[in-house]
Length: 165
Image (cartoon, rainbow, N blue to C red; front, side, top):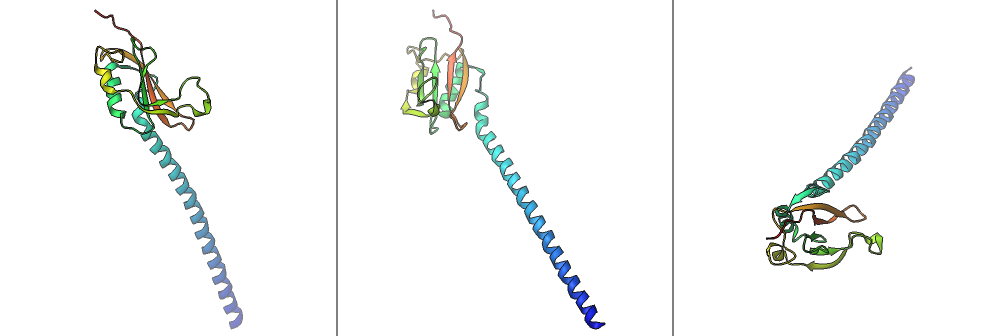
């Protein structure tokens, strides 16, 4: 009788141990999945925050003073360019880096930097030059993203041309 009782106790201990190990494994796997989900959510939030400074410019109309503020704000940003098309300069002037936009070939390089450190921001404040940005002018803003959905630049196109004296 003692042997049977001992055998039952050992079997119950083994069964409880296996049950405990199974529970721990299940908890570990579900915790891993929760961690992966949290990491993905954190990554999404990080991306949104990094792109948030550009949402004000995404297909909106801004003033000329906002354009010059953007030029100052993003002037030292790496792999980034701003093009400003004024009433006098329809082709536009690039500041920072010149980007590949439009129907230029190859299309898979859309948003890629073509050349760096172009344009002088001081020209946008000089009323004599074609690059002058009138602070009260209105500009349509368009955010340029590359094929990896990373913001690489902004294009400002003047929509109202103020009559010159």
